[in-house]
Image 1: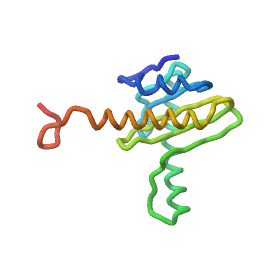
Image 2: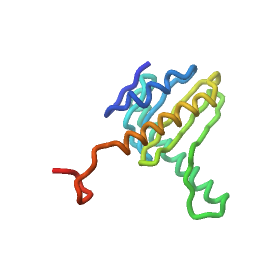
Image 3: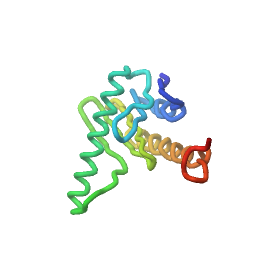
Length: 140
């Protein structure tokens, strides 16, 4: 399996696919736009996954804040277990999110470790991106 992308996202998603029994993965914005996805997903399915994942993250943040009796909460990960397998959603610090799906046979600890590792790599790459112009805007 390989990843399809709208940008250069294969380096993020392909290592996740190396975990045994991982079926698919996607990179998306927190507001529900797909930026990359693996071959197991069609473009329409990846877009549906991105929209649903955005909604799930919002609901998880609201639930966590409500239980803590706070106004807001940041979610570190969301795990959904179904009769088909597991969905793991991990947001990044820069407005994106990695979502992965593994069958019932996947080792959730290995999947979580790999997804969190890739999220950390995304953060490192974002921090090492070319600096913007001195006024905070893009360089001319």
